[in-house]
Image 1 (cartoon, rainbow, N blue to C red):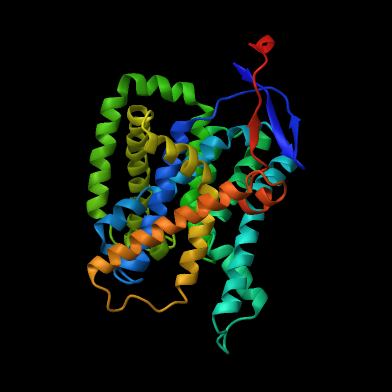
Image 2 (image 1 turned 120 degrees about the vertical axis):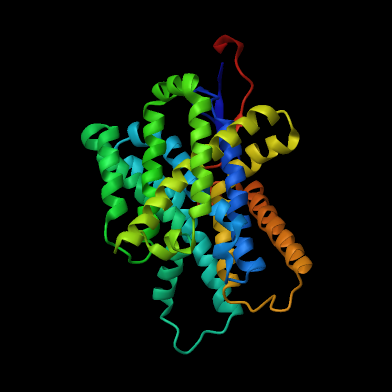
Length: 373
């Protein structure tokens, strides 16, 4: 059934063309769980370990094996229409408005708080240099997603994003000997963006394979993920190996990183999709999908801003484990509550919703016309 949509502009309801209501809440649920895991992973790093020793944490390892790769794969999957259905100029402009404009807003807020609340060291870099460092480094995943979108769009111009071209580009990006700034993180996540986009391109083919071989594939992926988990070590993280092959050992670490993240992501997306299928009528599950899963951008920006500020604060040196757990629970809850409150407050306000959330004002459902049914 088609529903008439309308946009709130200047307090008036402006009708838009009819459109099918086809949002995939299963993927929204997956995104909601993943962004919560992003926050929890940072809480492990900042609260439980105070920035030291967290590499060996089994909980930290299990989260970091898949959360950002799977997030990027979902981004690639959902980007198919934007990549293939728009001109290069329009696609890049829309993605910049969606990702970079709100990132600029939250980074500006971050710098304002730093200037007002924290004394500036005499040897600190200039304001502009510090702003650019935070703008890129603090919100690295946004830039990785934008760069991945740009590269795949360039490829799609010449050959519609064929699987072979995407595979070649993934390999070339992954092995590129570049370690400056956030390039290692782009090298790590770009192949997963391509995987998601390729899956969207050949969804029917993958569905037919999974229909007959799903149990065997999931069992094999689960065993492989478990073995990779046991072999995963500090140098397997991209933050430490920089996705740079220097010798045989570094090559093994990087191969383990990519393969382990791939199989772990495959297992986790299946778990999340099945969880949605079983619990979609549950209020908590639907809240995660509809509210948290559809607020992942602002949640990421808020949590990145908060944890960047925590780098400047001395805290928790003598905290007992129970106090750390309590502080982590309070901080994590506050981050989610603030991000959702921001979204609910500005999503219907023209320009402000674009500036802070990366989205135009919320679309309002009008009563459907029986003649359209």
